[in-house]
Length: 91
Image (cartoon, rainbow, N blue to C red; front, side):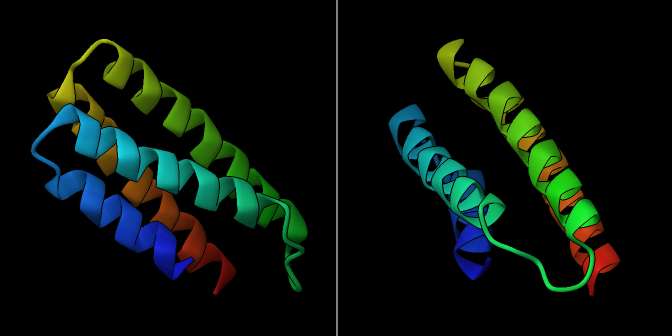
């Protein structure tokens, strides 16, 4: 989970599309890996949060394909809100 936060911060600090793309790919990999993990307390909420993150990352990918860094970063901000929301729900 900490790597997800670092990848998100790196993506937000990116100044080029290739750099942003690398961080987003890392974030997608982290989310994919985390989504396959069992969660001890509230698996349904955990799964819901992971699914939401995957959907939002697909939107970021669209912005990257359109070469729109501003839109991609706006979408990443939404991901950060979602991440914090589910983190609060689960802790």
